[in-house]
Structures are given as structure tokens and as C-alpha cells.
Length: 287
Image (cartoon, rainbow, N blue to C red; front, side, top):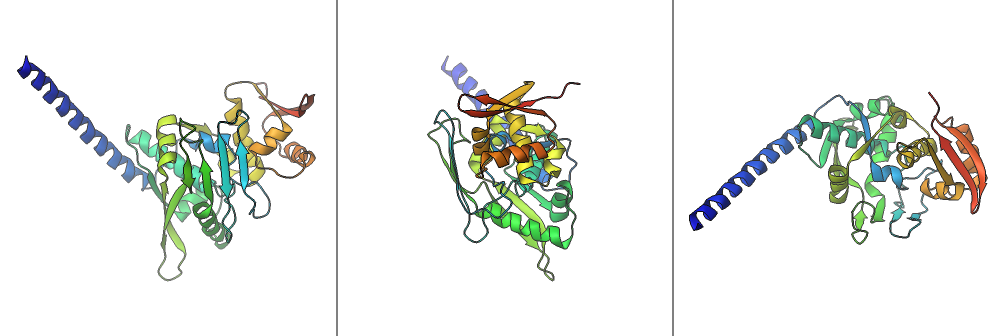
């Protein structure tokens, strides 16, 4: 009996070792794919990036913190800007959206591998998000990396337990520079452990390429927040005041309404009076 138990334990250990070796091989393959040029089958975004206000939507550089608490009081986000570079914007976050898309594509192609690191050339990311590899766009990319690397977060949205908090940036960056021009040639993005777990374990959402190509920070935010909250439902309703909080929009609500109406969103938009203020309704267009 003891021999049989020992043999069973040995077999179990051998299986675990083989599984670990197989996973390590897949992870290595995923890393190689995530650092090489690959075609994206789908643009993807992390669901918490879509659900909560993590990036500025202001036209001017934002230095004022974003402070958000969910209506049930269990989840919160505090975003603080860097005193020199300001706060990361929705447009800056396209660098992370592209990185997430490439990371998850690598995971799919490696059949289950995963890596917290993704790398790409500046040409790759700029063309993917609808910009050209010109001096003006290079200057924007350099500023975007500075803002993303130096914007601070304190939040509990990325973990299952509301008692676990993330402190610090969403990712760290390494840049490779041309020795003569000093311009950025390549970028490596290392996602923070909590974000890695959220991407790997709780998944990402496919988004329209329109989101990645949209140049307006507020419209980009509206496209994502409506999609993630609407889900498969034909309609989503929300008070303008709560929508403003989800969009980190600090101007009077009448201006938010004007911006929504001018944005030409792919939804039928209507408004009604609610108990706690005006309610915006977004409805999927009929086929």
C-alpha cells in the first residue's frame, strides 16, 4: 500500500513537472512573439481600463487628480498627475491598448503562453494607432511615454478582493534610442503584476479599431465606456452626472451633453428627466 501511494505521488510530481516545463516553453514562445512584429487579428483593451476613469479626457494637460468611487462604495480609483509631464490621457493610453492587443495575440498564437512584457518599434505603434512616423508624432509618442510612466494610481479595481490595492504606474517602460539622433527606436512595456493578473485571469474585451484610431480623448472614452457597460444589451442608460464621473469630465454637464451630441457616436442618443438628474440613453442602431 505504501509503495502504491509513493508511486502515485511520484507520477503526480512527474505530471506537474512536465506541465511546468510545457508552460515555461509556451511562455517563452509568447515572449518571443510579443517582441516581434505580428499582425493583430483584433484590437483589445483591458476591461477595467474601459470601465473606470483611469486617463484624462481634458483638452489641456491635466494636473488635477481624478478621484472616483463606485456607487456601492466598494471600488475606488485615485489618479495623480506628474508635476512636470501632467496626467496620461486617453490618447496616450492607445500605447497600452496596442501593447495589450499584441500581448494577448502572442498568448493566443503560443496556445496558452503568457508574458508580462511586450516590445515594438515606434513605427509599429504609431501606424497601428493612426499616426505617421513623422517628427510631430514622434514628439507626441515621447510625451505619451513620459506621462504613462509617471502617472500614479492607487486603486482596488484590478483585484477580485476590494481589500487588495495597486499602487504606482500601470506599466514601466524601456526605450531604445538611435545613437546619433537620440530619438526613440524601440519600446518595451512591462505591465505591473496586478494588471498582468487582470489581463490573464479576467480577460480582455475586443474593441473596434475605431477606438484605437479616434483622436479625440473624450469620444474615445465614450466609445469604450458605453461598450463595456452596454455589453450585449441593446440599450444603456446612465445619469449625465455619473457619466461625467466615469469620463473624468469636470466641466458643467451641459457641455458634456453638447460634446456627446457632436461626437457622432454609433448609437442613437436620447435624454430624459430622471429622479436624480438628466439621464442619457444609448441605443444600438437597428439593422
